[in-house]
Length: 89
Image 1 (spheres, helix red, strand yellow):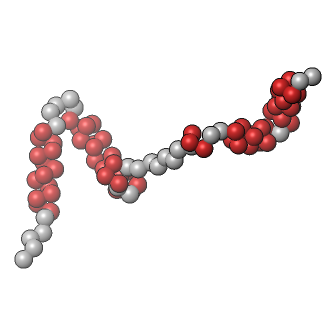
Image 2 (image 1 turned 120 degrees about the vertical axis):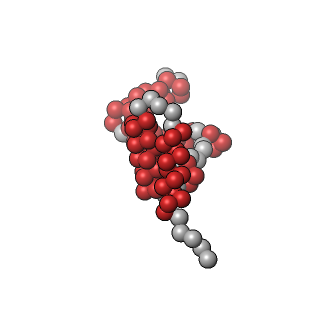
Image 3 (image 1 turned 90 degrees about the vertical axis):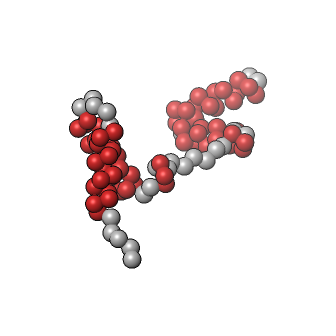
């Protein structure tokens, strides 16, 4: 039996008896330049609570627009924002 055939049988045995060890071996064989890091961010780097509120507002606007143009809804939001603005003296 050649080394290659012996290696295949060992890998088959590990797959059944110790899959964690098999994964560790496979991980060790990967070239280091293959590894990447990923990071999940919300648009505008908003914190999760602020992003959830923004998504809710967007969903409400879309739902209540009923296929109409969004311009009037967005204008109303601008009006609400202006109404709530505080004058800085």
